Image (cartoon, rainbow, N blue to C red; front, side, top):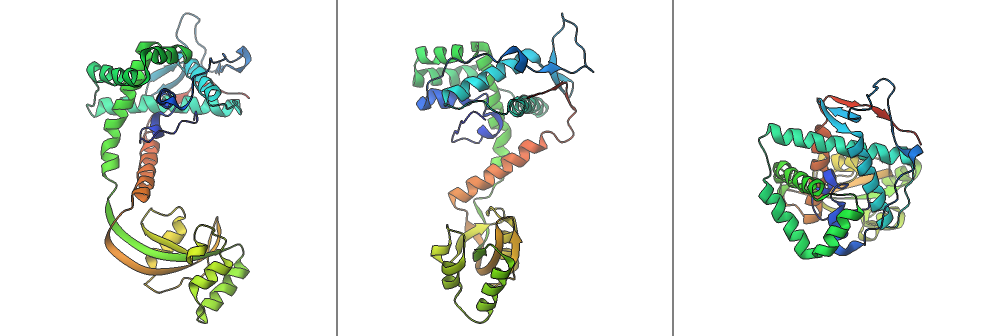
Length: 312
């Protein structure tokens, strides 16, 4: 959400809070953030009035509150991160919702960790922070905290969340196989049904698949290689319809015209391997997909009440 890309699975859950590691790694200096104007701050719903001397809540997650104060501080951090990376904040209502959704997910993670008996000790948190200070320097570390509205105690909870998420995601990642059934296939992608049918007729008449792919395919990543998609397991392609057809064909068999959001495909399965090592890049994509499914599953059955609405 803040332009942060970290080579770790936990970015899919805690990219907002953990963007500090991106900055501490030397990818950019933290800019002094600007507080959002009063008119941009979220308002509590009329249906949920709150007394002035009571905490104001923006959401309840299985009965556990997320306070307005915590939400506003995360908004400030979000905007600080955008400024540090040279981006302008746009679509205010959209990013406010994103920030709230992330806080909700973090609360769901806390609850799931507690339910599974997973915890992180103070010593583990302190060791992680000590390592970060050693890598970035004490002056820069504490300057970053101040510039991004973190007290040391708040930041310790960010690290605790990171380590909890690691433990919860470990079995998700381990479930993604390193060896799997795979298919080797190729395809020709064109922009119209008519053109696809013409190419298919020429293939059925005996013309060379690779030559027709080079001549007609609009898939620039494969056409110069005869439309070759390489080896892939189930879930390994970005276009599931093509993957499904490739696994359904016999070696050497050519499909009919397959329409997807990308256009019109003709697919040929070349060979199968029942137990082939999954390439690192493909496995990473499978891991990302598994984590996304896990992330979405956090909300399944949860009682989430959003108590504020956003306006642009």
